[in-house]
Image 1 (cartoon, one colour):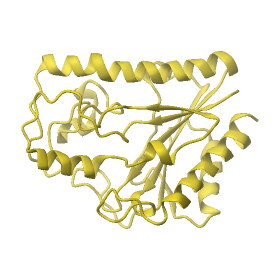
Image 2 (cartoon, one colour):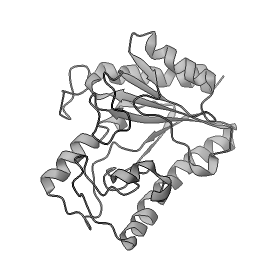
Image 3 (cartoon, one colour):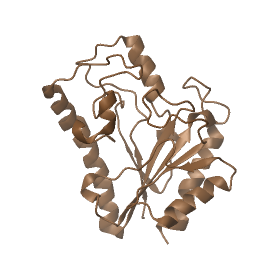
Image 4 (cartoon, rainbow, N blue to C red):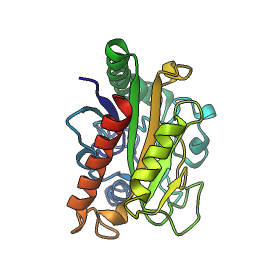
Length: 249
């Protein structure tokens, strides 16, 4: 059966290697609370999808950053592949080249191999792959966010000029807008995940869905709100829409 590939990079909270961290445990815990895309591994579920979930916190290794800091705009504020600063600007950890290479080889590369394997399976069997890049975001910007504008939408759809077809973009927008959700393209976050080796492969399509956490969490916490189940149902219906009315057509 042809399946969607769900990329879920920021739902986990584990820190496999504590080396280098100099921030207090309290500050680290606060950063995890702030930066984790809470429950996206549960919110984005579908029987006809392959989830690829990073099993460690983004403050340990962010698999959606470029591994070379010179290529990564967020590295300038301490949010490259390995985060070195808190959102406040205070130091989070000190990274030497040995530790960076260990994290890159043992965690970043392994995750990307899993993602590429899922993509390759779909390409081999069906000649096409659609990636849904699954995220959530705070209603108020992080201090380091490039987009500081408010108010923020309920749903943010991230696209790529090469890997997001007009039809996929329009179908996604229509799905949420027809249900009266405020929805914007590439705001407050832009783009979507495609591994580098598929950067020129038109058979790999991708779109990012970012959900405002106010839709499913109690404000300022990771506690599920009364609207959690309805948000999960909404996202399941979205995945069904893309699978049945886009992927397999």
